Amino acid sequence: MLRYVAILLLFLYGGNQIVFGQEKDTPVLITKDSVKDKDINPLAPAKAAFYSAILPGLGQAYNKKYWKIPIVYGALGATLYFYTTNNNKYHEFRDAYKARLAGNPDPKYDYLDDSRLIEAQRFYRRNRDLSMLLTIGFYALNIIDANVDAHLGQFNVNDNLSLRTDVRPDERYNKPTFGLALNYTFK
Image (tube, rainbow, N blue to C red):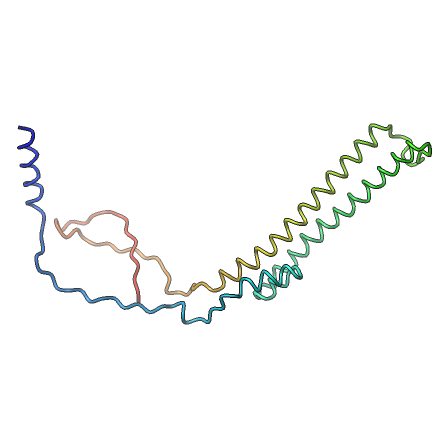
């Protein structure tokens, strides 16, 4: 019995669908490639990355993003400054601790005991190493930025790329329907 009801529902549901047996052929869309309007250099990203690897900021200059050069040099300069400062302080505390162990205590650090000198060495060594990691990170980020910027500079971003809404009535019931559609139009 259940089988007959399923078949009946299938015929009833399938019977009220609008079927268009013969439709006019729609013309084939011929698209124009808008990317070929620009000259694309496939080696530009590699060239920009190479220039930035040789001299930080040179890849940004190659991409004509001159405003990024002070940011690159500011980041690299700040991290190198902190590296040298922490390295100098580390060597001061290390030399003071070695002098104390040798029997020639430095009067500048008489107020610190041995454990404090060791702790200061660890502190400045850790900060020195962290500063070096940040310097290497900003150097790599400089190269990656030049490469990605050269890639993105070749994309088509003209005014013809837009998003607009389009409301259409339902063809079956001739009532307005609500929905979401993404239409890609070639012009």
